[in-house]
Image (tube, rainbow, N blue to C red; front, top):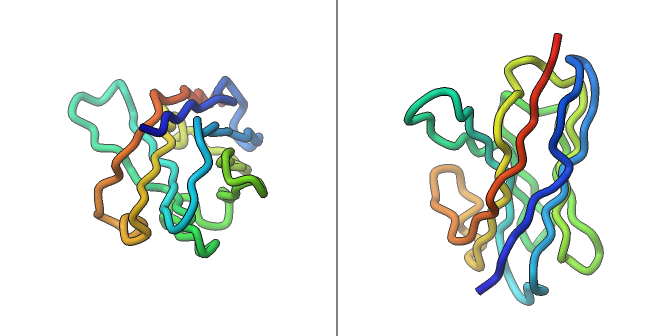
Amino acid sequence: QMRLMESGGGSVQAGGSLRLSCAASEYTPGTYCMGWFRQIPEIPGDERERIANIDSDGKTIYADSVKGRFTISQDGAKKILYLQMTSLKLEDAATYYCAADLLISRCIPGRPMDTWGKGTLVTISS
């Protein structure tokens, strides 16, 4: 089964930028959906917020909370997923997770994703 590993998290000042990466253990042929989610660990039961998706057709979807500030992309070999985050706000602080699914329909908001990374922590200072 595919494994995902996020990297690039860290501490940044509000207004700054950060780029997250997600390395997949294998190339995904055919159709797929990949995405970034985030979760605030200090809030018990906080659900993971879907913030950006990209599918095998290159179609992207963003949550309103990050639209215009975050950009999801993938490299040509389709083994690394990126999330470029700019104009970071205090409320962007969270653990960010990469997810993937072989069903392109999983890019529809609300649909569950099959494979998850372990997350990378982003902290924002004022």
